[in-house]
Amino acid sequence: MSEAYVECLVKAKGAFVFKILRALLYALCAVAFLSMVIGTGVIGVILGLALGAAGYYVGMLGDVEYEYLYIDKELSVDKILAQTRRKKVATYTMERMEIMAPIKSYRLDNYKNRQTKDIDYSIGYEDKPDKRYVFYYEGGERIIISPSEEMIKVMKNANPRKVYSD
Image 1 (cartoon, rainbow, N blue to C red):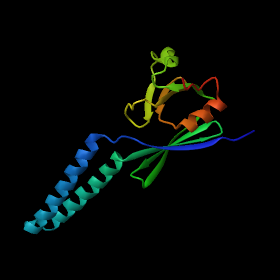
Image 2 (image 1 turned 90 degrees about the vertical axis):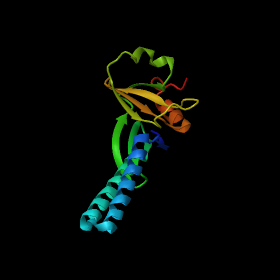
Image 3 (image 1 turned 30 degrees about the vertical axis):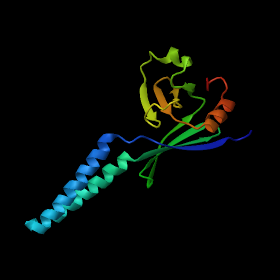
Image 4 (image 1 turned 90 degrees about the horizontal axis):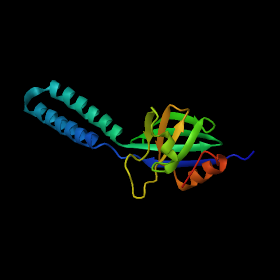
């Protein structure tokens, strides 16, 4: 049996709230350090360090990438925060997948009225043309991803009756 191996890395659009919050925390950090000079002493240092650390972690949450790894009928999704921390998010076997198609495909019309849990591992916005794909997993999850053309081709060759590229 031949093994298929494809990996794809996509950068998710960071929420604008994280950018504003990070800038606000860094500004408050600078104010805390400046107040240390004026006369608050140790409290200004501790507050400045705490605000700086909070700004760093909020910045990490705003800089997210997803890596899809397809190995022999198994899709693994990893979340990469600020290009420094990697976390395995989920693993999906293609035998349990019901259907996979582009997000605006007519093939998904029969699945639209289902009560499912939406999970988004995509770029986070509608591109022109929209290259996001949706797959329904075990009837209870609707997963949105942004795979490469090569990954779609390999997945379609492995599961021709479940994967559509319209």
